[in-house]
Length: 207
Image 1 (cartoon, rainbow, N blue to C red):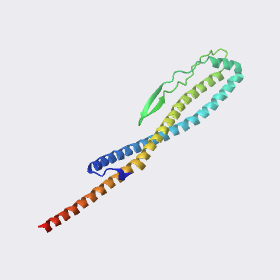
Image 2 (image 1 turned 135 degrees about the vertical axis):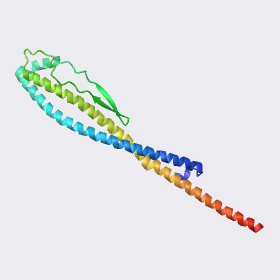
Image 3 (image 1 turned 60 degrees about the horizontal axis):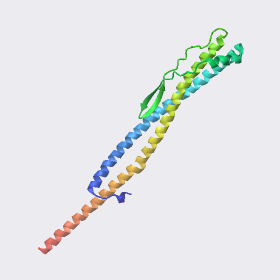
Image 4 (image 1 turned 90 degrees about the vertical axis):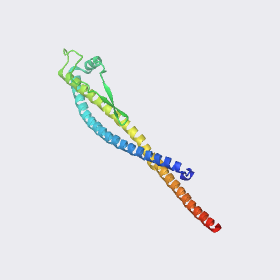
């Protein structure tokens, strides 16, 4: 491909500038990839911690629910559960990391705010309610972390492709083109010197 480049000094200067820009772009993208990889590892670790914590909290919540079902009856607990309003107070913020928007969610209030009467209910129901509020908090945090992991992984893949394209295609092409043009120009200069010497010799012979 380098042989298709016009071997002129102007083309050489343009090729050198382009090669320099390509190398700078490669270095910036490589730095971006490293930063995103570090952020990805951090979020993966956070996700694992949240999953472990949520498994434990889920187990406690279901045990509390079983006790409430036994003490009050499944039908009563279901009726009360239907009366609990859906959680809508999720506040999501976006943070940009190297151009990747990462969601951050404000902690959900896991404190006990029962929407049912204490009359006719048991303490086991309060425990179950509180435990599932904690589950809700963990689920919201895990959803934000897993979304971040996905977005980071997608961007890392795109960045990796760009780095490879520059590293294995563009930069080698520019380097080979520069070498080709320099060789052609040097050969041309040598030929010019030879022609000048011959012209000088012919001129001296005529004299």
